[in-house]
Structures are given as C-alpha cells and as structure tokens.
Picture 1 (cartoon, helix red, strand yellow):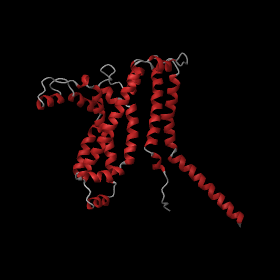
Picture 2 (cartoon, rainbow, N blue to C red):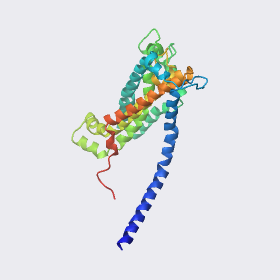
Picture 3 (tube, rainbow, N blue to C red):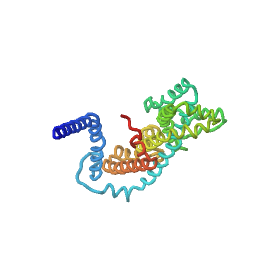
Picture 4 (cartoon, helix red, strand yellow):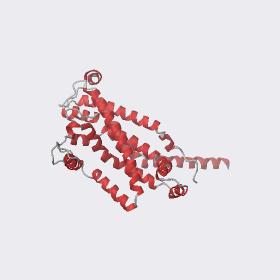
Length: 315
C-alpha cells in the first residue's frame, strides 16, 4: 500500500513539473524569445562591430581596438557631450518628469473628476501627436522674429523691444523644457492612478482630525506615491539617456554641438559621419551606463521590496 502511495505521489509530482514547464513555455517563452532577438543579439552584434574598422562602405577589413583607443585618448569633444548629457537627464528628470508630474497629478485629482480628466486629456495631446507636429509648435513658439509666440507675449505684456532668440541664447534650457513638458505626461498618468487607488476613508479621517491640504498630501498622498515615483525615476532616467528624437528635430544638436547629448552624438558619428565602428563603440558605453543607472536606482529606491512574497497566504 505504501509503494502504491509513493508511486501516485511520484506520478503527481511528474505531472506538476510537466505542467510548470508547459506554463513556462506558454507565458514566458515568447517574452524570452523577443528579449533575445531584440535585446541580447543586437548587443552582441554591437560589441562585435565596435572591434572592427567598419565605415560608410560597411566593409570590415580587420579587427582592432582603435575605436576604444580613440574614445579614451583622441575624442576631445566626448567629455563635453557627457557633461551635457548628465545635466540634461537630471534637470529634465528632477524638474519635469517627476516633480512637475507629481504636481499635475495632485492638481488634477484635487478638482472634480470631469475637469481633471479633461485637463489630463489636453496634456496628453502632445504625446499622442506626431513628434514632428509637436516640434513644429515649439519652432513657432521660439521663432526669433516678432511673430514668434514667445516674443509676441514678451513684447506685448512686458514691453520688450528686441525679440529674443532662445535657440541660440539658451539652447540647453530649451531642450530641457521641450522634453520635460511631454515627458511629464507619463508620470502624471501613473501618479494619478496611484492617488486614485488610495482608500478614500484615509482622506476623510485626516480631515476629521483637522489636517489641512498640505498635511494630507505630506502624510497620506506622498507616502503612497513612493513606489510609482521610484519606477518613474528609474524608467525616465534610462529613457532620457538613450533618446534624442525631439532634440534632433528641434535643434539638430546645435548650435554646433551645444545640445548634442550622448545618444545623439552616437547617431551623428555613425550615420552622419559614416563611422559605424566608432558609433558602435560609443554605444557599448551607453549600454553599460544604462545597466549601472538601473542597478543604482534599484538599490537606491530599494525596489527589491516590491518583489517580496506577501505575508498573508491566500489559499
């Protein structure tokens, strides 16, 4: 009898293991395949190309470490590009993608639901619109003539006599604002969802205890936004580090190299100058930076707590 019971248990265990394998293949298999095809393999190809002399002709005549030697010893502009990238990423992130997004979420959830939904819908329009259309609006705003929207406001309201030229006078501030305005919309939606998920009785209890608006935000709302803020910070840091679409359309990286961030510098070297191997070598470092920033963010915000098993077991 004991042998029969053991055989049944072994058979049941085998079925469970087979079921786990099948579930793994069905649910995680496609994700693993896509990750390998579109993330792992491109990284391997990029590293391989970085050790060649591939140029505009796409011909490879040999393997060399010349590209990395050029990065560490020969490219004098690279230090300025890295410094600009750090300023651009952290300024856009701190001012707009996190702080301003939190403010937008707080304001739109403090009003009635219809007004809040309308305001969020309007703010999302640039993100849902083509990038070219969004930049065309900015080009009209910063037009250096008296017909530009910004100059019209300054000359009418403040009495400014001479039009200003933000593209040449303050290009870094311009790309931070242009990217920040559209980047804040993502955080706004995530933070709004988190605020809506806070139990309503907590707000009622706080008001009964005499808490004002700022006290409610400080002691109830902001603690509930800890994990959403952590996620948005890590995600937007990586996104800003590798994106350059709006900068390319708005300033083309200029004047000269004044708004050329690291990702755009790779693009200009590889596709405009035809230095594909050198661009691949530069890309290796942006991959490494992305991994480092992700690990630092994971450690700094203690994201491991999000993966802890629940203390209450649900049967």
